[in-house]
Image (spheres, rainbow, N blue to C red):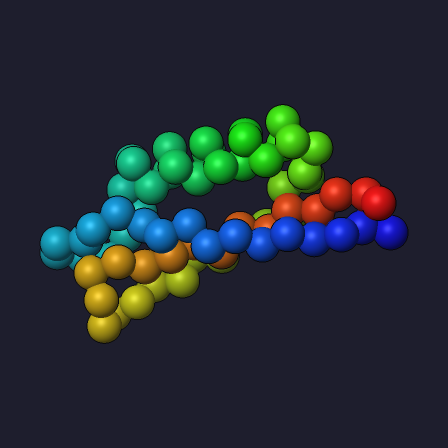
Length: 66
């Protein structure tokens, strides 16, 4: 049996087009590496663009065996 944990990682400010920046990728890597050192296993992520705002988000899901 697993317990799951999801986190929302807000992306950097976008000026022109909606895409992930180098900083966004580094932030995602940092979050995944931090959670794995805590015993969480990375499951998946989903990029959630927001055309009505200058920021979007990445939903990241982890799991841990109970």
